[in-house]
Image (cartoon, rainbow, N blue to C red; front, side):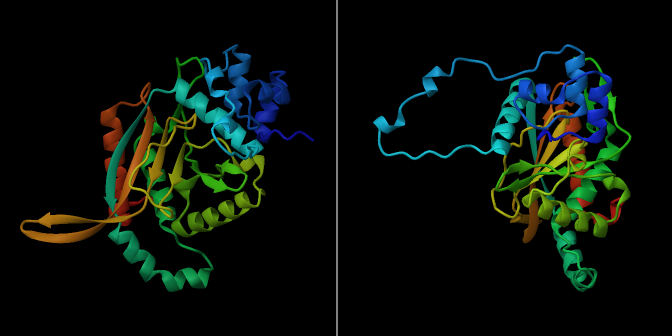
Length: 295
């Protein structure tokens, strides 16, 4: 059986267009194939790979001291090639902002007993998924993909949110389908289920790919900001780091306010800076007052 990860719809498209999935994956240097890859192949578009003379990297490190070697996992090698290709092709810009999370913290505390009764872990990430789903509906240009030839913008009438999961086998991005139609409890349960199965390598091909946008959440680890790499064919990616207490002055009175740093990287071929700022401002508004979320 092929080790290539591709959804049933992608495999069906490949059969219709007479594309060899295994050969295409080998050509692209990865084991995950999406419908966009098949369409690009049949359109005759050349795959993009990092270029340049890297022969000077190939040195004998033992000349300088003791070393050990560790082989890269298959997933890590796939991710490395995909990320390098994305950085080569996409003129990405990262917009930074912050959002007050006091309302979310209060709600999670107030609903703690209900969460226990439901057997659901209501994390802050569930609120972020719901807020992103609502913001994508409010800003449909972000919920689109650029065609392989760069001439057509494909708008999507669905909202699927990818969740980047760091596993021992490498980065995996399972997807919450139709997140804009789901409530917080359902989203929270799906996040836990997908992350758990991703760590156990039990995610099916149909549970990956096709995201409107991905969230890369480092809040449980730390950091104040970073520049996540756009995951094509998505046009943007949202990074989240650890909530921090910021002093906000109201006149002469200092007030400690819990704020979460937000980092929005976007494809500048389609999205301009003003749109990104408005998008993240709207998103922050939903985080600051979850009652305005549409889910």
